[in-house]
Structure formats: C-alpha cells, structure tokens
Image (cartoon, rainbow, N blue to C red; front, side):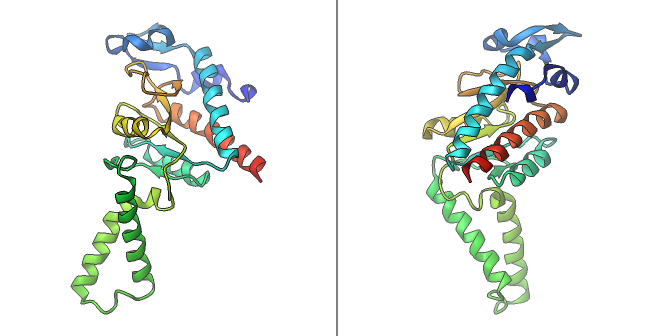
Length: 230
C-alpha cells in the first residue's frame, strides 16, 4: 500500500499546508515540520505513516463486510465527499450533522423510513388522492427529507467507523461516534485537538486538492478490499 502514497505528490497538492502558526493546537506539535510564510507545515513522512495505518484499518473492516460512513460538511468538500462515498457504495453525510444520528439512531431510522415511504407512495401514485396543494406540500417535505437523509437512507445499523473530513466543523459527529464506540478516522489539521480520533491523518483539511488526495487513497483501499471480500 505504501508505494501508492508519495510524499512529493502530497506536497504538490498541499497536504502539508496547515494553519497560521498562531492557531497551532499544542497536541499537533509532533506533526509539524516547520513554518513557511507564517503557516505551519505538516511532516509528510508522518502523514504517510498514519495514512497507511488508516487505510489498513479501512481495508480490514471493508473486507469483513462492515460499513464506513463518510462525513464532510464543509461547503467546498461536499461534492467530492458525496461522489467518493457513492462510488464506494458507502453512506455519507454532507449536510449539517443531525444530532442523534448515532446516539438516537432508532429515531433517526424512523424518519429515514418515513422519507422512503413518502417517496415510494409518490412514485406509485399513492399521493394522487390528495389535492394539488397537499401534493405540493408532500413534494416540499420529500425534498427537505432528501437533503437530510439521502446519504444514510440505506444505513440500517451503526457503521463500524466514520471518516471525518474536517473535524473542526463536525465535532458533534466525532463526539457521538466516541459515545457509541464507532471508530473515528479523521483528517487532523494543525489547529485541531487530535485526542478524540482513533486513526489520525495529519493533513490540510480545507483545500479540495488535499482532501481529494486522501479520498482517492481511501476509495482505492475500499475497492481493493471489496474485491477480496468477494
């Protein structure tokens, strides 16, 4: 696996570019290699090592038929997170994390099932008996529910692990995962406290090019492990 992770390639796409030096979280000091133009740079040899560990864990759970939930709600990352998850046939959250997605999973599942039922009724003509205004209200409701639940519509139980792309924005997801024993894999930038994360990937978590690099490696690991499972 290590032959696919290239330090020069990571540098080219900005994986090593952290935040301004003044924003350094003390616990990320071991991952910092220096300062460039007032910005901390991440030690890519450590990123490579930790990314390999994370990918090995992902390969293991996928080969066991388990599920990885992708979470990335930063506006610039939503599209690539969704596309990668869909390519991997894994669930995803790219809109605001709904409190209770893990900790109140049964209630969330009821809402997901209601959304799927409404969609089915509309598709099979089950809503035709209602007035035009009522049908428009149903359409609006379905649209809202789709935004909230489309990515987790087929997630029938808690995932084995969650991949968080931007733990500063999705700290609620991380806290719920920790409470429910769901393993946390996360990109961790220089301004983040890494303590809650089980598999740290020290990396720029804002630049699309950096996140895309990591997501491509994750996708490769999932695809390869999926073939082995068969």
